[in-house]
Image 1 (cartoon, rainbow, N blue to C red):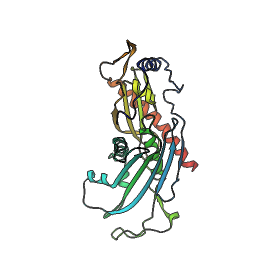
Image 2: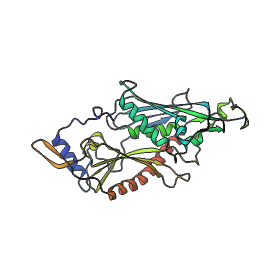
Image 3: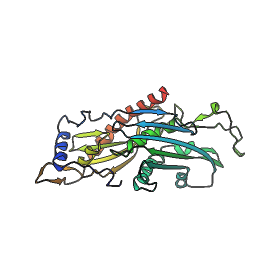
Image 4: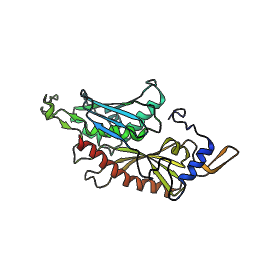
Amino acid sequence: MAPSTLTTLISPAELSYLRSSLALVPPIRPDARTPTQFRPLVAEIDILPSTNGSARMVWGDGGECVVGIKAEVEPTEPTSYGKRRNWVEVGVEVQGQRDDDPLGVFLGMTVGESLLTPTSTLTERLVITPKFHWKLYIDILLITPPLSHPATLLSLSTNLALRSTRIPRLISESDEDPIFDDDWDASIPLYSITSQLPPITLLVVSVEERNIFFDPTREELSVGDCVLAISLASSPAHDAPKVIGVRTLESGTGGIAADAKDGVVAASIGGVKRRVIKRIIKESLSVGKEVFESLQGVVDAN
């Protein structure tokens, strides 16, 4: 991500105080949330009538995201899985920034990576016949400039948009050119209730070895020892999600010392132990299950 976009403009002394608070047992977050508690959000689906699927989400820090999905038929050529990635095109536009801004490109790649892992099953759902497939255009508009890392906001919004996506019902034979039912009420959902749902990505930050925080703010990201983006997919039975991807993110300072002397914040030394990574992944599975259930509540309410 472009460093200038999410730079934390607080003093070294404030960063040191924040890290000391997050390292306590129990920890104290600036907004009094528990380590696994997310900021309040508002979500809705089916807000854009001219799309196959859409969603809108407003995050607790004021970040607002709108996702629209369009599907069109394309011929399928004999291809490897790698070229199937072209069946999904993700574009991210950040309000007030150029279309070719590195931030939008980076965020688009972040969303696309989790959607196109071999275990996400998205491309398999796009097959119409052996000779034709659907191509999805996922357009994401980040209406407000990101006040914290927007990966989770974009991921959850895209999840809801995909779950609201419907495609016309095929009425022709598999060896013919595809013909679809014109009745939109007869369309079928891209994701059924009993199937594996679209993946989500959660940001998790660790401070010291004992405290792990979900949905970190920009300031919390700046004092973390380790920041991971954990991509999760739900199981068909929705018993527990599974990890389909883990990425590391730069944490601003890479962790800071417990105190600042002469206005200088000392960087932490050494890496993150394997047991910390293991614990982050374990807790992500538990929190991820709750997130999937909350997203299901949004779908049911609409």
